[in-house]
Image (tube, rainbow, N blue to C red; front, side):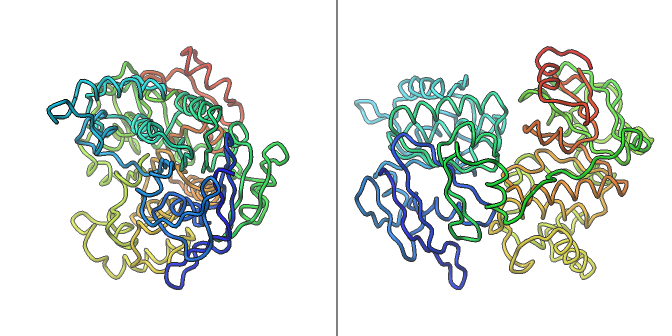
Length: 495
């Protein structure tokens, strides 16, 4: 057996993050670890990766018991971990990030940059990434940064690889490149632990799955002998027959709240033409990097608009920064909540109140804000000790809910959600979908982007397909299929 975790317990003071969890990883196997946010997956992976030591229990690698307490010890034993949060320095080049701390040297002891570039190109090609090694990492798209993070992890000569939500920021093409890479590792006899909330990719990629619930072992299955319904029931303790709330009839969209007329966004071909009704959820679909995020930012920030007109609530909407969007009542849930949405060093209360009043955001919330914050925490069922808790301590799903609460406290008039459930478990996804539908039913239109086509199809009333910053097709939700959307995204055909 390549890895054995037996009866692992981990406590943080009175809080039991893990209680008696066991897991075994065979050579040449891809083993999924599944559970809701807060189920203990990340804690278990950090114990395997040497970040934490278990309170009780044993860990064996290749039959030998290990008792490490530093990540360097785990790496020396042949364990490489690719965490969901990027550990990249944006002001360094891709090559410098890949070789940070282990730069090749010349005979004179200087950094051998030529060799570093050459090896970086080879490593990037190995994960299917065509990038200049000298480009600054901070200038890359989120999906490209994720692939660089993956390349950094797999370039180590390891025998066990831990992938924590590796496809959360990837489009379909990048995800397939990752799957090809994992299959190659598998064919070489490596062991892979794979955490993901996307059930279809588990059935495509994994051999077996261990399910955790509330910090405890809940079940182990061979993928060929189980199904999505059984896994969901084991994971959340209930059946999720209806993941998505019922959508509105096609004629119930309401008057247009947002209109884009012949809009051309900087750097894209355009034009963009679509509307969002007052009682609608509209999705933007397309291949990775075709302008979906640039379009949402043009609505929210305004300054990337080259030509055309954006109309909001019946009036021409011309602004030159996020303050204009916020002032008009537009809220944004960014695709990368940790770097663009959250103040990780601050409390939940201060994060929720950050968009409440100009100049007050990071100050102590006013009494009226405290009541509103408490109301939204209860409404959204955000799991926390208290609102003074640091937001970095919350699970991904609860962090996402806190961002939603920020705009609900403010009384948002249009909500833009870029990747509304990135890194969120299935139970929390269902709650977020229900909330977005509740908002649109109440007259707050919602504009969504997502790399998950089933999410757009299940959630949205209409789906607009974008190619090179131009609208090329539009589908009503009940008529949309993955095949139709992909055909339009690739061929540029109009529905």
